Length: 431
Image (cartoon, rainbow, N blue to C red; front, side, top):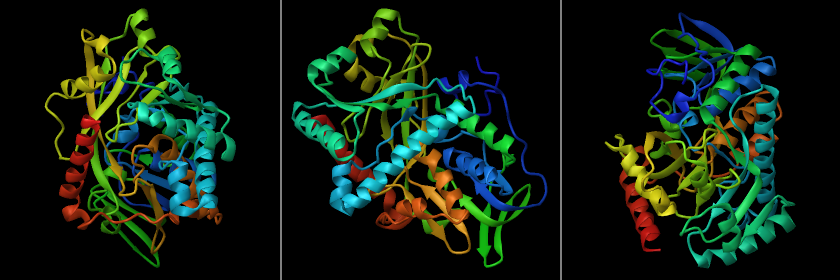
């Protein structure tokens, strides 16, 4: 059981299995620093850690608690592949740029694993992510995709999975085959976020929880960040708010759409049933547009994510909402108790590519990871720190990707996305 006050975070399996009880005080009074980081998720924590390691005087402000948002509530899948498949990247940007994105994402995965080892973060890392086809017609695409990754991207750690191969990994009537990536893996995201924050603290970053930023202003003299408890004056600002940006920076808000996604955790499964769910302890996701994703926890629960909505409110019964998706994959779990159900808010972009960049007067940002934030958001802070130190080449690979504004900006993006997601959800069901 967690030693953390249960009122600090929304209830979840992750909260009940969190490691340690470290918290940081709210801001009190005025401060000056080199860099003010706004947001205590993966992006902000990583930025604070990397900047502090490079000698910057860093203040991080989090309106709730470290890992409170999607960083502490997500599926825990840590993949090293770009959000767009390499085929799509090559079509949209050319092979050279596609390879740059591939290499950056692989470097991000290397960095994540290195941070876990270096800081001894107890986050239950396990190797292996499987992409599971829902239709036989998808198998030919995956066979060609794996061939391309191995030949053109030197990805000798990926393999095609036939239906028979998939049956050796799980017992499910709907998973037809797919691909395994043995270099990627899965972890306990809240423990990982808190581990990075403790490392940032030890590196010298000044972290303040329960400090809501009410206004951000910048000019040629620097940035002023206002909160009810005090003001921070900084040379640079890093925005790591993602799905919780709201109206803080209107120039960025229209590039992302906050959406809600949901998870459950079963009771601990008996050994025979756990074997049916995942024989090798890999993470899985399927090929539906509204994706399902799942993995086993360290104590042999199934952690399953499925279903989303686009309103400000979560479903009244999250366990029931997600359970129907779980039973499509694993009908043998009909009698299994559901111990936890929770949700979180993430941010997607129109083209599903992450949105990196700079605003005038020294504001840097990274957002819109579109479901791939565990690895890339953790790396975003390193790229921002590189850019602030004068080496912006890798940051600019990400910043040079054009991310369209949602039609109608922040006013009309909701009905447009709801209509689009309803269409894709219907397509998933009709198959």
